[in-house]
Length: 127
Image 1 (tube, rainbow, N blue to C red):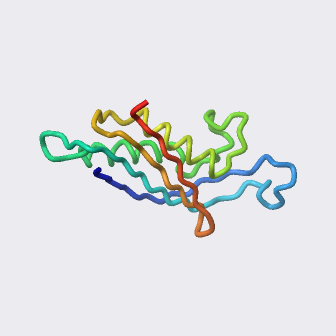
Image 2 (cartoon, one colour; image 1 turned 30 degrees about the vertical axis):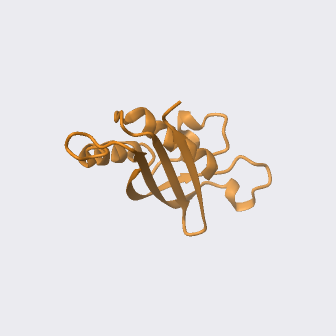
């Protein structure tokens, strides 16, 4: 099994919608670090799991959608508490939609919020 990973950092804002989240109920920023991991058993004829240049472009485009924005204002968070868990799932599902790579069998996102917490979301593409 091959695994390829890319890492990025960006800042985004949010406020939690729980009634009793204290200071987290106010708009504030976090430094996010996101690690994208893709997996597959087969390489393409060039010896790549995916073209890393294309993957970088797709990953950067995805993260630019969130960079320096409030998650609460984005349609994909409508009706959701913008928790790190929801954010990790949303990033993983959107990367799956953006990525055309038939030999990639799984995508994972590991999303760090500041230096305090992280969440991981895995998506199996074999279904």
